Structure formats: structure tokens, C-alpha cells
Image (cartoon, rainbow, N blue to C red; front, side, top):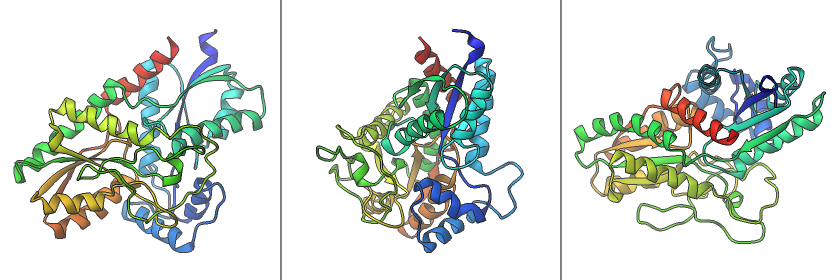
Length: 346
């Protein structure tokens, strides 16, 4: 196959450029399902707290800025053009696919910038890609779709490199400070097969599985039929366990929780970060290193949910949180993505 007609396409979530776009952005997230006004206003508040304004930021919002930068760095690493498409905001997947057709692309290797496979992320990205291939002008190109890469060793290394400084800082306050790994929660129904029961939802601090608080948004989407439980909760914990092992943590030194449960609707999976922090404080800890291992760059779930909300929640408990820096433009992350893509071509 002519290499000049092949391409790499990275897919990501997307984020609004200005506060007034929030309702339209959320309609994309929910496939047109209207969100209550109080939800729109709450999310506007959160984005405003991390710097989003009515006038677009010159460098763009964090998620867009860092995702496009990752594409640039990957292009330099591989020596080829990298396309980046977003499901919920500009640059939309459909617009990018249309450009790829204009550019004469005949085959693409497609990778989601969400390493753990889930119907709520990778599944929806693939469906958006397939829809765009059908509906945009020009002949459709073929593609290889990488649904998940949670066990990539270089991804583990990238997270471990960022975790070590945060853990060292936490242990200057509390010599036994543990690590709390997190990943984005999903609605309970999305990890269930349509013909069977739920998959594991993760271990609580006491080692028992279960559903988190009934807070969140039933989402939002028709995720399609499934004959097996979603692998997402298991893959999240596998990533955390691999990072913990590489960092030299024993089983008693780390915990796992799901963060950022929705703010309207039916239950999402847990345990929640809030419940876990409460339990860790009750166990006598004074400091915690926290690392979100489901995200590859800064965005609202990190800059607001962790840096503002969880820190405010932890303070009255006598806990100080030290967040591991996001991967963002980590050279090891770029090497990890390059390795995954090269493996897909072999």
C-alpha cells in the first residue's frame, strides 16, 4: 500500500472553547438529550474556575491544546502527518474524516486517546468514525481501530515517571502516604451486557466491590447491544496495578476509586473518591498522592475535580493531596503511542 495514502487518526473527547458553548457542547455529549439548566450552569462554573472565558483562550482550552500538541509530537516522532478528531467539539471527527478523504487517504490506523477500552468512550468514537465515513463526501477509506492499550508498558512508565515526585512530596508529610489512582466513572448500565449481569465495578477501600453513590447522570447515550460486560473497570485497575508495581508500591500502599460521577440521573460506578478519602483519613493518613490513570492530559476532570473539588473536600479531613502531573507532552507518552501504532501495523 502506498505509504503516502495511509494515515494515523487520533480520536479524543473534545471540549468547548468558550463558556457560552456549554449547552451545545453538552448536546453533543448526550447525542441531543437536553441537559437541565442547572447542569449547564454548574459545568460553566467549573470550566470558568479553570480559566475558560467567553473570549476563547489564545492557546485554546487545556484538553484541545494538549491533544493537538500530542498529535504534533507524534507527527515528529513518526515522520508523518497525524490527524486529530474530536467527538464532541472542534475539530469534529466528521470534519477531519472529510479532510482525510480530500487528502486521498485510503487507509488509517485509528487510536483513541483513552487507553482503557469502554463502550462509553472508544465505542462511541468508533461509531462516530463509521458514521462520518458514510456521510461525508468522497470514497470511504479502510481503517484499523485500536480499541484499547491499557497494558502498554511505556504508558505504565509514563505514569510512573509523573507519580514518583508526587509520592515523594506526600511522604514528607506522611511517611506512609498511600497512592490513590483514579479513572473517570461511567453509568452503571454501560458496563453491563445486555444479556447478562454487571461486570466488576472495582474494589472499595475495604476490598469489597459495589456501586458508588447514586449521584450521576444516566447517560446519555444508546451505547448499543453488548454480549459481554464492558472491560473498562478491569482495564482501569490493571493500569493502576502496573503503575503501582513499577513504582515499587505494595498492595497496602495504593487504592483505586472512580471520579467525576455525573451530576444528574441514575447511579454511576464507584467507589467514589470522596468515600475513599474519608476512609483514608479515618485510617490516620495525613497526605495522599493522587494520580488519574484514565486521562492523558489536563482538562476539567483534573484541573477542577481534583485540583479544586477533591482538595477542598480533603482539607477538613486533615488530608493534603499531591496530584501527579498529567502526561501532557511527556516524551514517554509519545513513545508509548508510537509503539502501539507500530504494533498495529505489524
